[in-house]
Length: 85
Image 1 (cartoon, rainbow, N blue to C red):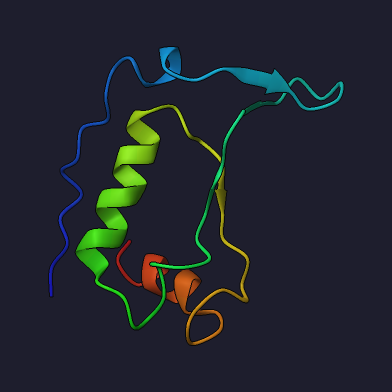
Image 2 (cartoon, rainbow, N blue to C red; image 1 turned 90 degrees about the horizontal axis):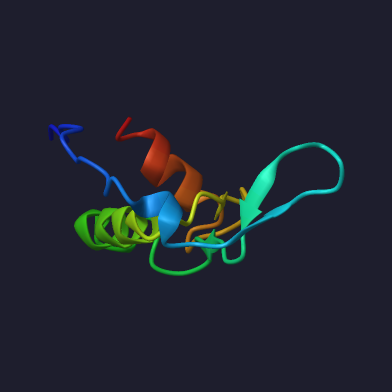
């Protein structure tokens, strides 16, 4: 199955979120992150998962928690996203 990467992010996405510096590193993180705990495993709909990620990114979320233990099946969120890139 082919998954083209034709999504164009919102041009004002960085204006929609507040960011805070992470220590003295200069790295800025959004006030909210998206954890892929549920809705991103091997048993979930790929289209719904990607729509959620695109919506979050379009609203300024740039931190995504991809812990290798999320599922269900444990670790499948990483595999789901990596297999489509």
